[in-house]
Length: 274
Image: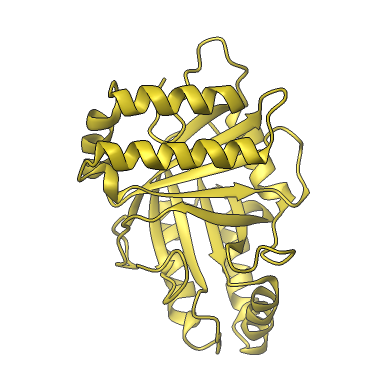
């Protein structure tokens, strides 16, 4: 099946089970330092299963609790933000994903200190634990295409999210991945479709831990499902898609899922700010 960012057919390719994909996301560590401070951001991720008796209303209640507490924590990092995803079409055992992004690892740690120093951390932790059973990690997030997302920070989706888990093909490396991304950006510019132009894309890479089942994750965001459908209709079968697919297929093998994305608190600055 073709999907917009990677355009990789599952036919004949080795697939990564979605459960392993999430395990990679959550067990891996990413850091924005180490020579990437201007390009990348550390992203804390939690992949969760609802506890017995809990529903997605409880997940939205958890998001609202963080939203209410956010301004009282004294977080000085303008690039800090938080989001929650709920599934649309995916095959993992997880019911929702929560993410917290910062400018740097230092900003992340300061945010955690402010969380608990404000006196609200214990209560939020308790609510988090009673809502779901989660595994957690930090990834390194780098924007590869600017686009458009909503900024409502309420119970209406701000993004329709495509998530790709990829392994590098034999002989390929991250330089090949970046070259394929650059070629894809040129093809998108050449297509120049209003819907596709709104597509916002990131690469997440593991830094510590992980199961070794995926080498990188691509995350693509459309502002809503209607724009996603219009963009896919324009991209699928186009000469630009065929050309981009060829490049991606040479260097990666991927599986995919679709999620509804909601901002808990949108960043005021940084790559994810609008």
